[in-house]
Image (cartoon, helix red, strand yellow):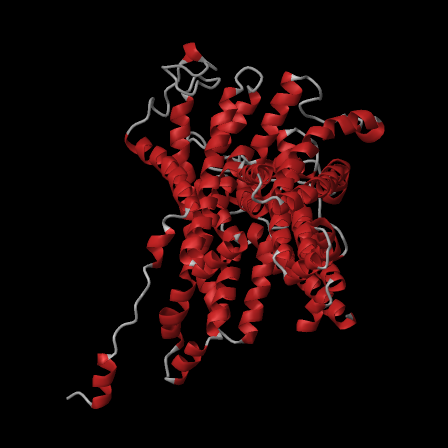
Length: 316
Length: 299
């Protein structure tokens, strides 16, 4: 286990290095001078030179690359081109919106979707079971922002029950207002993620249901729910952990679109406005951080999988 | 000049090949999925020769009008006919979807085959790259590319294509590796068949159906990705219509013209449900083992 851990962490560091390099080279080495694209057409050469100097693109590419990697290791992501504020501070300022949004949608979709998925599998030929599976299919097929717009129209425009978007300027100083403005975004993200999870849980349960040990348990007099409860979690755990990892990562990424639908000042909207404004350091830093999060979640998933299902370790 | 052995071989009759595809066409998923997709495809194709109004046509007297005989799906706040936009949007979706899948397969399949056919070192390297690209979300890749090049159809296609290619490569490698362990590949190798010939004769014929199913699913992913990019303002730039941008524009007028939200979202859903059903159906048709398993499970 220990050697596995060391190998896995080494692999993570390697991946972070590759991801950081990829972000750098995609933005810098591909044809196109960021300084030129940043400025309006007809800017003077002096202005272009000034931007180049600020970006550091007047130095050799390899020197820039070394600089970017060195900064990454020390946790410095550079300064924004427009506000001149450190990228890391700007990102930190957005987390109080994005983290609660992503995490509560993640937890809620598990709470809602797992029972529904098991139900859909057990009653797969009943009317309700089929209806649930069909709804989940639809939830996967509909774009998340469409679900968001419909939720806004229904709850905020028709019923006037909750604000259609935005976040209190004072942030969490007014917890009630902050929570209120997160209800619809969380609900939307939960519907979208939950639909995916229902499908996974349904097929994982179907898989367990078809196993011999369930038949044996049934023949020993266990009721179906008890047989499932006894054997399901342990046998399905490895798969479920993997799915939860995917779910957590996609909850985080889902915030990019959700924050745009609900005009929330989170990490995703920071990224989107920076992409449109071509604020390279912010885009670079945010994308790297999000990718790093996905990679770390992947590592945790692998380790937890090994812990819950030792058979995985035995095979290699 | 035939030797007895050749004669003996020639007299062996070809084995009866069961007509398995024909039975499969009865798969309801396949039929429904194909019908949904054909409807979208028809919209896109018809828009090439005819649409109710021109792309630039605006009707200032009928802004945000509801559905009527004149404007089947109503108009937006500029007075543009929504059904025309929907048809032209179908063209954008189908085109970007197909092109992205083509890019994904052009990158993913050779990469996956290379990983499966080459030695362990190359395989590990390729698998590592695939894992990182899979962890690197398509949306973020698109945002990086848009930052550098600005929003355009080409950027959308490359970003979606590269994003999807990782999954294609992973699947190709796994299915191809499985074929490489088969006895008939060993036999072919023993006979001195070169690696390329083995790929063409044994590997591809055994994995193409898996890849075909993957291609249909990838098309659905690409259509959703395109809509999301356009919704965020990072996809095909105006005036080319797109379902995603229609939704983004409809969102600002949702309190007065909620019907404008319905159709573009439905169009995306029909496309995605269509490809998913089609993929399911194809899998059933092309993989007789799976079909038997399902029948056994339903019994």
